[in-house]
Length: 167
Image (tube, rainbow, N blue to C red; front, top):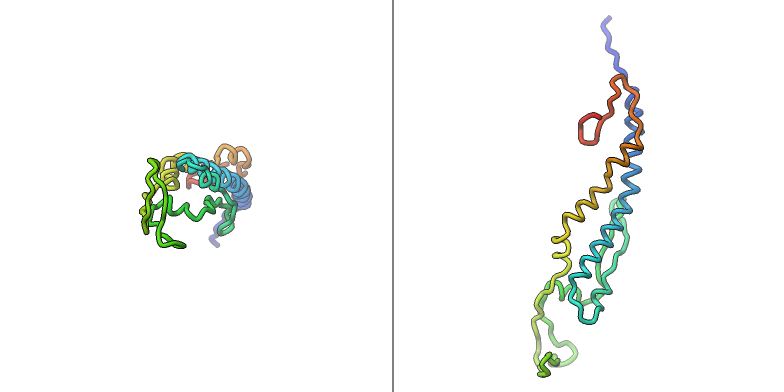
């Protein structure tokens, strides 16, 4: 009678290794989400023009969760933040005209004005993209999980690697 025999004892060790990797990634994920959120907030604040400081001070980070993963929401509670970022028309609401004084002392009376965009959010992300990518990749700090995992006791002493190869 012909037969086939295979030893799958290394699968249980691989399963334990993967669980350890997952636990380490989950722990690092929360730390990196907070770190990236705070770093992005600081980068945005640095680009917001400073006049009174209200908009700059209003930029804040809120920890949250999406699909079981920690995330950081960075935003402002000022109603004019979107207008400042993208620009747009400002119209008189409670009076027939907007009345304001220019820096040279001239008074202006008009029904609407166009505010030019003063972007800070997108430029902050674009200028620091490499830094954020490096921070995100630190979730998978290979040196840390390499030292934590035991090498599977198999005939070949090999253990699958996350990249598809073998260690």
